Image 1 (spheres, rainbow, N blue to C red):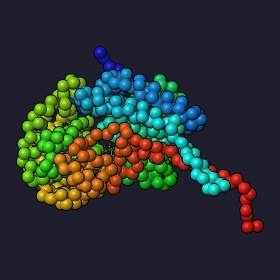
Image 2: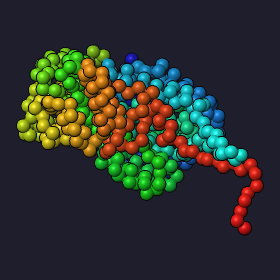
Image 3: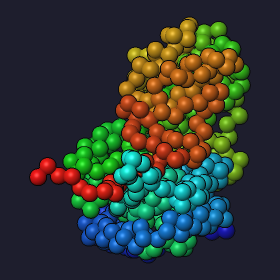
Length: 485
Ligand code: NDP
């Protein structure tokens, strides 16, 4: 089977592909070979304008539908996405370089979970009746209006759906800007929504770098901005949105701790550490990249980890047996290589990996550092690559304090066979998305998001509704109005 990778147009606006070659060229590079597989163009101001006009028009129409009808469009889109999972997964692999073994189960499937969940929830989103004796207040849950989604490059389908599904369920329209590194997948989400019956203009995709995102964020027609990206970008986007008093959701970076106690099941802890550091070649915001291992099991943990890493199948991402693929881009690979050099220079013990793999594409070995200390750069900064830092600790109190000593707070995990310790420790870790004897599960039913510099707001679950809608309250007086004069 051959796949059409070059889309019919760079952008998707008002229910159709649109091209404007006046915009800067965006080459799409397949990470496993370094070859150019498609060429898109960044949105010009005229394209951005077209998208906003289309979204504004569609939103007015969409908000008038009954929530049940809106929900039906989303659940239909979920079904189409699930039927096309294989095709969409292949495209995700071309867009990101992630192995098909992963994309078949983690991308379009997660996107369709979100569409299905919020499609099902749509009809139950209501206000309330507040009795005040004779008088009463009722509340109406209203959409925000035209919303902007801006995505990172690690999960292009999932990010588009995690934003679009609750936004549309609540009656909003969206203009989405993917990362310029992975511009392909969101276009398919837009196509599928149209096919499922979404009105033209409800979900638009415009391509471009940061400045296209910035022009959307500052537009007065935009009511809300949801960004998935790094902390430095989040700071800029949040500030720009604040100037226009817009709603925001910020899903930003992390340097999350995973605490492994002496009494943990070693294989489960090693499995969690592998998932939390090497899935998607380590390019996951919630990764547990600071693995604190209690001294009693440190060497056993490292030995078992090393053994299991030998089973990684590194190779062609389109081969379903491959379990570890390339980095998304040469630039990201170079950034990660810089961190590995800093790890070595800083005195950490390189247990395994550390080198670029001798083949085409942007492959780095799964890398583990041990004897990492809290002050080392690799223990403080988000690397966003396949680099695990193992730190050791003596006591529970010490581990909690050190785990919390970071500006980030996206995720945290605990491995222990002591039930009360699991809950006690997780209760004290300052992070938004936490795990006990597991790592990196992100079902749509659970709220997802960070504290501290890792972000504001929550995606997924019923909690997301609060971030994509607003309450109008209506006071109803049943008697006469009493005025002082
Ligand atoms: P970036 O912060 O570099 O970019 C994120 C998006 O913002 C891109 O689409 C980018 O455009 C755009 N952008 C950049 N500058 C501006 C601006 N001034 N105004 C508006 N938009 C702008 O992140 P990456 O793409 O490099 O992704 C990696 C980061 O994302 C990591 O820090 C990771 O932790 C985080 N992340 C967080 C997740 C979460 O849910 N918490 C999930 C996944 C990733 P372009 O790049 O095309 O120029």
